[in-house]
Length: 86
Image (cartoon, rainbow, N blue to C red; front, side, top):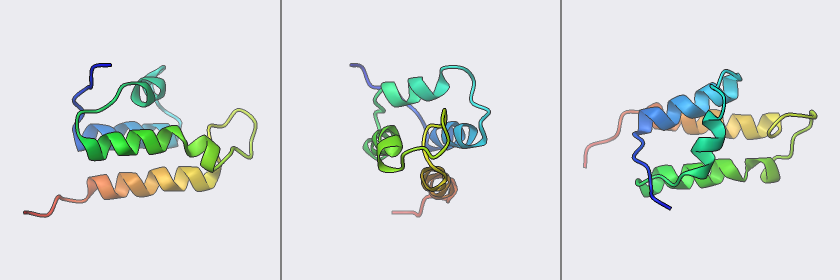
């Protein structure tokens, strides 16, 4: 499968919209489905894909528990940090 180019800010935006419950239709599925060129960002994609297993939903119809959503919030905070030089 061809890998897609996604900058850090775009990945952060996708995760943030998902946590806020305002993702456009199919955005989350597309994010989880298509590998990302950047290995670090792809690792985040893979981790996100398994959050529902690691943090099963406590409310029917939700993707994962509140703890899983907090993991995504933390990832967003890290992605929004300026990259250190070097």
